[in-house]
Image (cartoon, rainbow, N blue to C red; front, side):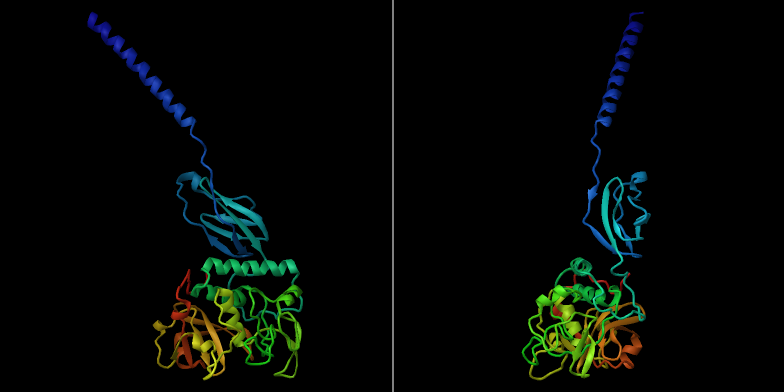
Length: 347
């Protein structure tokens, strides 16, 4: 009988201790602080562009992203689609991404039907915003890298919604020709889209005048819309990527430094496709372009050409090596030194 009483007392004590532990556990769980979502840097998108978020570390229901304004951004899984201009955020229980959407530039695409840039198309605020997006693209690629040069070229060719006219330069800033700044060339950061940019111009022949507006061109002896010539385009690309080459021409030349001298020149007839890279320059006598992309079938070359203005030419690999008019590739590894966040093809 005494043994039975002792056993009952032991069970009562054990049950009491278990209840206390359960209450303690419950209190610990309820007192846990709510985790704050990690705020990421702002992401800029063009209207119609998509963006894939990194996979979240949170599992279950908390992993699902939602948009704070579904009129601006929609989200499906980890994929965000920009619907209309504005600023909003995508969030789940662990991450928060702020997006800004604009219709002042476009998702990257080859578009041979672009209209020419109208004269004074942009306000000062719009022009400054476009410059900000160009700088953002270069920063994302990695300044002063191969990827940065590709990003700058792609921005003007694939993202800027208008085509620039070919304007044969009235001069340069290198002291070898007439001194001219911004007349078929623009050796400055950003796009030449608003009147305030004229304050940067240091020498004029028939200007200054912004891109898209009529300016007298000596080569054709008439007024044409100001834009870029071939070496003006490439020198602009390299400067905006972070390389200060000087306001130099296409070449090749025996007695002066030109764009042809920046890398290792190889004949198209002798080079293999595996030795050609996105970001390399291509040239022929007095003309130069840049490879802005390579995929499984095609090579994409950006250029300012007097027949077709600022454009992208698309070749199959066989066409480029055997039928295209390009004479040589300028391999730019020693010039760029770093690849940065290089992508051979845009998404």
